[in-house]
Image 1 (cartoon, one colour):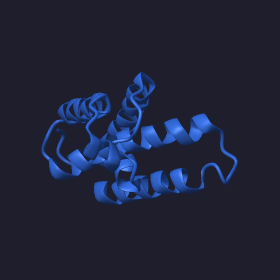
Image 2 (tube, rainbow, N blue to C red; image 1 turned 180 degrees about the vertical axis):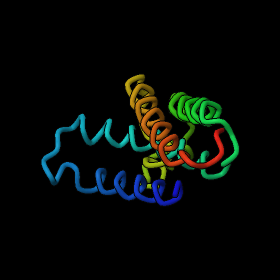
Image 3 (cartoon, rainbow, N blue to C red; image 1 turned 45 degrees about the vertical axis):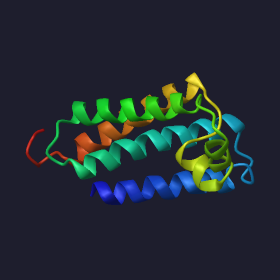
Length: 126
Protein backbone atom coordinates (compact mmCIF):
# COMPACT_ATOMS: atom_id res chain seq x y z
CA UNK A 1 0.00 0.00 0.00
CA UNK A 2 2.85 2.40 0.83
CA UNK A 3 4.48 1.74 -2.54
CA UNK A 4 1.20 2.56 -4.29
CA UNK A 5 0.97 5.82 -2.35
CA UNK A 6 4.61 6.53 -3.18
CA UNK A 7 3.99 5.97 -6.91
CA UNK A 8 0.97 8.30 -6.80
CA UNK A 9 2.93 11.01 -5.00
CA UNK A 10 5.71 10.81 -7.58
CA UNK A 11 3.19 10.94 -10.45
CA UNK A 12 1.39 13.94 -8.91
CA UNK A 13 4.69 15.72 -8.30
CA UNK A 14 5.91 15.20 -11.85
CA UNK A 15 2.53 16.27 -13.25
CA UNK A 16 2.49 19.36 -11.06
CA UNK A 17 5.97 20.40 -12.21
CA UNK A 18 5.24 19.63 -15.86
CA UNK A 19 1.69 20.97 -16.21
CA UNK A 20 1.18 23.26 -13.21
CA UNK A 21 1.93 26.51 -14.99
CA UNK A 22 0.12 25.42 -18.15
CA UNK A 23 -2.94 24.75 -15.97
CA UNK A 24 -2.56 28.36 -14.74
CA UNK A 25 -1.88 27.29 -11.16
CA UNK A 26 -0.25 29.99 -9.04
CA UNK A 27 3.54 29.92 -8.68
CA UNK A 28 3.30 29.15 -4.95
CA UNK A 29 1.09 26.11 -5.59
CA UNK A 30 3.49 24.71 -8.19
CA UNK A 31 6.66 25.56 -6.25
CA UNK A 32 5.66 24.61 -2.73
CA UNK A 33 3.17 21.94 -3.79
CA UNK A 34 6.09 20.16 -5.41
CA UNK A 35 8.13 20.55 -2.21
CA UNK A 36 5.27 19.21 -0.10
CA UNK A 37 4.99 16.20 -2.40
CA UNK A 38 8.78 15.74 -2.32
CA UNK A 39 8.74 15.63 1.49
CA UNK A 40 5.90 13.10 1.37
CA UNK A 41 7.87 11.03 -1.13
CA UNK A 42 10.92 10.90 1.14
CA UNK A 43 8.79 9.76 4.09
CA UNK A 44 6.94 7.10 2.07
CA UNK A 45 10.17 5.82 0.53
CA UNK A 46 11.70 5.37 3.98
CA UNK A 47 8.49 3.88 5.39
CA UNK A 48 8.32 1.34 2.57
CA UNK A 49 11.92 0.28 3.22
CA UNK A 50 11.60 0.16 7.02
CA UNK A 51 8.11 -1.25 7.60
CA UNK A 52 8.87 -2.18 11.21
CA UNK A 53 10.28 1.20 12.25
CA UNK A 54 8.28 3.57 14.40
CA UNK A 55 6.40 6.29 12.55
CA UNK A 56 8.15 9.06 14.50
CA UNK A 57 11.59 7.68 13.70
CA UNK A 58 10.75 7.53 10.00
CA UNK A 59 9.42 11.10 10.08
CA UNK A 60 12.53 12.32 11.90
CA UNK A 61 14.82 10.60 9.41
CA UNK A 62 12.80 12.01 6.48
CA UNK A 63 13.05 15.50 7.96
CA UNK A 64 16.80 15.13 8.45
CA UNK A 65 17.26 13.97 4.84
CA UNK A 66 15.09 16.81 3.53
CA UNK A 67 17.04 19.41 5.53
CA UNK A 68 20.37 17.98 4.40
CA UNK A 69 19.29 18.07 0.76
CA UNK A 70 18.10 21.66 1.18
CA UNK A 71 21.30 22.84 2.89
CA UNK A 72 23.34 20.92 0.29
CA UNK A 73 22.02 23.50 -2.19
CA UNK A 74 24.42 25.96 -0.59
CA UNK A 75 27.34 23.85 -1.86
CA UNK A 76 28.51 24.94 -5.28
CA UNK A 77 30.92 23.04 -7.48
CA UNK A 78 30.94 23.23 -11.28
CA UNK A 79 29.94 19.58 -11.82
CA UNK A 80 27.24 19.78 -9.15
CA UNK A 81 25.79 23.01 -10.51
CA UNK A 82 25.78 21.46 -13.99
CA UNK A 83 23.85 18.46 -12.66
CA UNK A 84 21.36 20.76 -10.93
CA UNK A 85 20.59 22.32 -14.32
CA UNK A 86 19.37 18.96 -15.65
CA UNK A 87 15.81 17.77 -15.09
CA UNK A 88 16.98 14.93 -12.84
CA UNK A 89 19.20 17.28 -10.84
CA UNK A 90 16.43 19.82 -10.38
CA UNK A 91 13.94 17.15 -9.25
CA UNK A 92 16.35 15.34 -6.92
CA UNK A 93 18.44 18.18 -5.50
CA UNK A 94 16.69 21.39 -6.48
CA UNK A 95 18.50 24.51 -7.54
CA UNK A 96 18.02 27.31 -5.00
CA UNK A 97 18.20 27.19 -1.21
CA UNK A 98 15.02 28.26 0.58
CA UNK A 99 13.99 28.00 4.20
CA UNK A 100 10.39 27.94 2.93
CA UNK A 101 11.16 24.61 1.26
CA UNK A 102 12.04 23.13 4.64
CA UNK A 103 8.64 24.19 5.94
CA UNK A 104 6.98 22.68 2.86
CA UNK A 105 8.92 19.43 3.36
CA UNK A 106 7.73 19.32 6.97
CA UNK A 107 4.12 19.71 5.84
CA UNK A 108 4.57 16.90 3.33
CA UNK A 109 6.25 14.64 5.86
CA UNK A 110 3.45 15.29 8.37
CA UNK A 111 0.82 14.49 5.72
CA UNK A 112 2.60 11.26 4.76
CA UNK A 113 2.97 10.36 8.43
CA UNK A 114 -0.79 10.77 8.86
CA UNK A 115 -1.43 8.69 5.73
CA UNK A 116 0.94 5.99 6.97
CA UNK A 117 -0.84 5.92 10.33
CA UNK A 118 -4.18 5.42 8.57
CA UNK A 119 -2.77 2.77 6.23
CA UNK A 120 -1.08 0.89 9.06
CA UNK A 121 -4.28 0.70 11.12
CA UNK A 122 -4.91 -2.98 11.54
CA UNK A 123 -1.26 -3.85 11.28
CA UNK A 124 1.02 -4.18 14.26
CA UNK A 125 1.47 -0.80 15.97
CA UNK A 126 4.91 0.65 15.34
